[in-house]
Image (cartoon, rainbow over all chains, first blue to last red):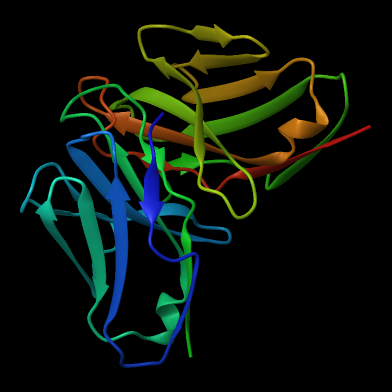
Length: 114
Length: 114
């Protein structure tokens, strides 16, 4: 069974802090994704990666960066947290490029920026 | 510009009856569609998918219908059960029936009451 693990379920940080959200998958998936979920807006893609050290911008990359040093781990970085980044963050993974296999999601990190 | 739209934020259905969740899309390049279910405090889980070469796909109590000319898909749940109460997201992707980049709708909250 696919397991996508996000390091924190809840996180509270202050404006201006650098914030790291970690995600690990155990299925040797090539693709990994970061989304944020907001009421009335659904899931929006921030960044994704289809290989180690590779990254692609999603629909809302501003204010975020990512790091993928190992295949199983994908980190989302808020360079200088702002209150409008308070949200639910979801990590997902899937099999290789151009497959029709579904993305598998972690349970999310609810991040509050004060 | 919302390319995938779920116009009903919520739906309430009696146990044993049919639940019909609707989804409309605007991008004619979309060729692969998925439905996800999300319980509170959990990540979305994959439910069922359909490619554009089909107009129907069935898996147990869940059936997805695709009407390409109307750019519309729907998820039917028969019979509905209280455990089906969740938020349902439809998602779409373009290019070779893959899931590399999914565009999600805003979700419909289904409540199944006894």
